[in-house]
Length: 164
Length: 340
Image (cartoon, rainbow over all chains, first blue to last red; front, top):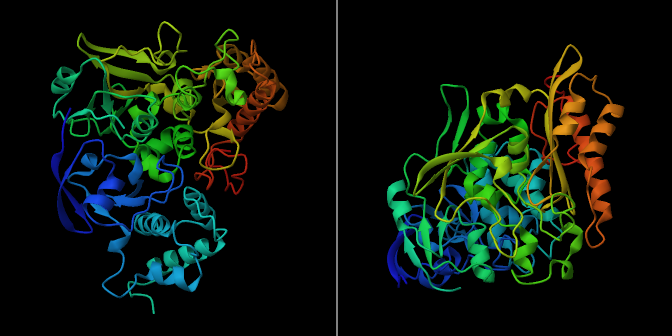
């Protein structure tokens, strides 16, 4: 069996040289080996979306991927959204629209929407609903998340300025 | 999860040489990693294919075929404008499957190789009739309880006559996607006809497949309108010339251990004027021989209605833009059909 193997994960632009067994998922490696516990694990079977991060710009389930598969990729997690104490526009809209309550699903939603903002900011409301249907939230009833996402999409299309 | 050997070959020859009994190929991993977590499979060696060269292209070959490399991503294929324009029901099927995050990571070869869901959920040795029997196959099993093939993607691929390019220790071979899946038996638990150690290099759509682009739909009926496997589905397409159907294709999904193409229904439609009566007759024919297993009679009726509606939607024309809710009967904000 392959014992631990040395890999470097590039997370939010920073290299993390870690020693992991091949069977360790990317989500576990981010949390346990890189110390980045913002990525949450809910179902661990690709159903709930809490562990969503972006890999090379695309939102993926980090629980359905081994850490070794992400070697060499540009990995982005919720920790990379804010610039020091300044929240990203999307994070600010989440607060203003009350798009979170308990907050467990929030990192996954933020990364799903952040990836969508960058890939396809021109989507319709129906398309946005379809995209967000991949993640589960048991607190908000989704409407507030949709409103925050809509504001972030509109903001991304119309300005390069940070949110007020 | 059991420990395993991890190897990452950089050529197809190296990959084939790395195969051993108990090994598994790793593409995107979205299905395999989950199967390994549940213990449904426990490979002793994973052969990561991600570094193999020449497997990520979508190209049109000299003979007009479209070749999709095995490692092309599901999202990438469905969002390729040329591909989606030529094979709209294939794109619609992909976009109706799983979720965006899974489609972003999953490969096309991994999609066609995905495991039947009921079988692993209940464990390989369990009684299929002890679980949710509503989703068991109604065709192609001689009445034996069996899981359906869960792939949306494979349904239009079979309708369009796609083939799989395979390489193994004895060289390369092509097989139709229609012959790729099989019902596992007690003696032979394989759910595909591939021999262990064979590797998919690419999928190929024949030149004539793009001829159906103007009238081509995939319709998927599911428990909820997003992120769910099909209860029933149908890929329907036709070429309409001078108001008559010059050629039609009809394949049902989620009714059998493999996509269920219905040549009799296709023959019946040929030469006919598109309309509800002839579509109803074709849909009836499509379910010929269907048998309920464990009380899923509803599935036979639903599949017939799905086939009928898919034919009707295909005749109306491929929408100019992908519906916001692909392959759904509720994706109604259809813009002006491009080919009406």
